[in-house]
Length: 308
Image: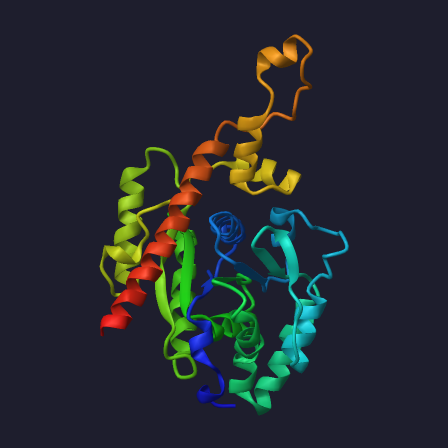
């Protein structure tokens, strides 16, 4: 398989959300940005390429009839042919479901790479080309530690989006990300870094955030624009509440806003709802800002390509 066998024009709005380290809100960012864009009218496909399958918890389909644990996606990656997305997980939002069966895809693609290395790397790209025309944007939730599936993701993507915490330990994963991007440029020459998003940011941690921005920019040999202006604050309570209920953060916030008032409950006109954390509204605003910046950065890059 050669680079020319992949129709890159169909994959111009594919984003791989990637980091070499777990616990950086990668899946949370993927699910919530996808949901917000879908709410705004964009037709979105999310590819859950993580064998952990945590996206199912964020979108609320864990262990129901839609959750095949990645079987359909794994078979398509290993043997070719189409993969059918689960349609209507949210309005305008479809999902190629992931999960534990993707471990089989890792083994299968690793074996294939011995005879056809480019073919193994481009398996996901080939799978997405016939689907891409149905969507305005495709987001890939990458596994944190699976080199084979990570490589397939960035080989399919036009853009890489990297969530990272501000602490030094979390930033160590960025070196592996940079190496992964460089490794596929021969077969995916259009791949570029959309940016780095600082996540789990502490309130008032201005100096820590400034240092992180400087060091990340230096790592990617770029200026400060490599790091998104928008950040996502830390809120364990919001993260726990959304996954327990299968809601996205903006949905949880909306549920609270539309819920009964305290005085309606007190006089018996309404029933009390499970209490939601106060931070949900602020985190929802953060995620909205990230989604808007993604669209702005992509649109700006596309405009430059047109005028070039």
